[in-house]
Image 1 (cartoon, rainbow, N blue to C red):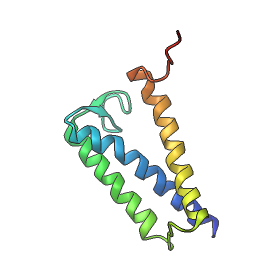
Image 2 (tube, one colour):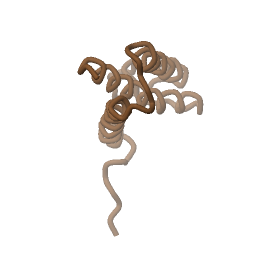
Image 3 (tube, rainbow, N blue to C red):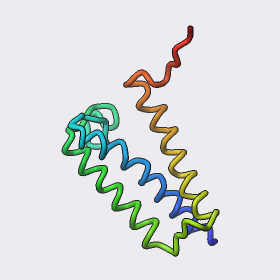
Image 4 (cartoon, rainbow, N blue to C red):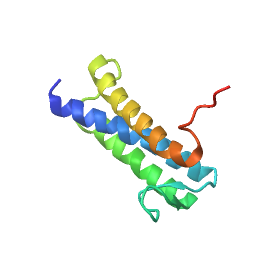
Length: 109
């Protein structure tokens, strides 16, 4: 697989993983951080903004994964590229948003 397709599938996985918390928070009626909040990424955006942002991320993920190249769920290199993108954005989001929601400090007994 050409390196450009690996990069595209990596980004597709990142957009797919990023779509989930925004879309779910919005559907639950909960505000959540988004790039459109003031300050960006720190303030909370409305549930409607998050549904729209999550949906936009789903669309971008679809375009990158299904319309660029020939993404194949049975091709290990395709899935690894997408999975690494999802994992990386997931860990980065957990670290970033954990500061606001108490997710970065494990409880010690």
